[in-house]
Image (cartoon, rainbow, N blue to C red):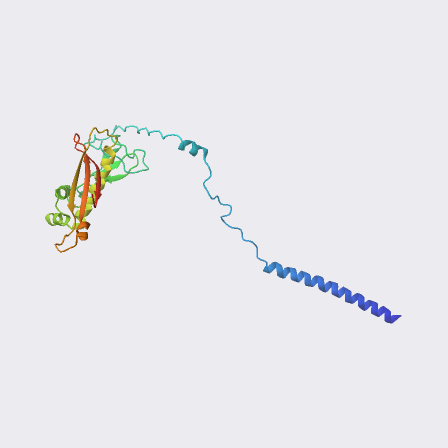
Length: 251
């Protein structure tokens, strides 16, 4: 009888150890799997907008033509000595200033010659911006006299080469080329601003043939064609203005 009791107790203890051991093993396994399991990373830009949100005011403004800006009020000088330098044809170059681009509004005054230089310094009384009177011209930051630049450009216009002009005015060819490039850019800007919306009654067309580059006597005919250039130009006989211009290598 005692033997059966001991056997039953040992079986109960064995079952209890198995159950406890399995639960312990299961908890250990869960901890290990949780540590090695990778958590999905949340993207930092997932919630960011991918495009600009619609703006009803902007959409309504795009369909309507922009109204012309009204000129700012004229500033009248009430204190101090009357201005002796005429600055009515100057404007403030500061794009953030309200008077930017407007001339004859009384906001520009002369401010002397900095460091005893050739050009006068101007000042906008609204934003306090100071600038030289040559700002926006081909004479800006040039150490040579404007007469020298004008004469060099006239020589180039008369057909004198860049190197020959540099020798005449004792300058570097790169300097002469820079003057020519800046003058061409200013001329194009002025032409676009002044010459537009013109109604012509007649246009005269003319052509010009020129040979550019070196042409050797013993060279082949194909090499000779490389230096030939044709220029077609249209002019208005009334205003003497030059209109369309084409450059091509063949007729």
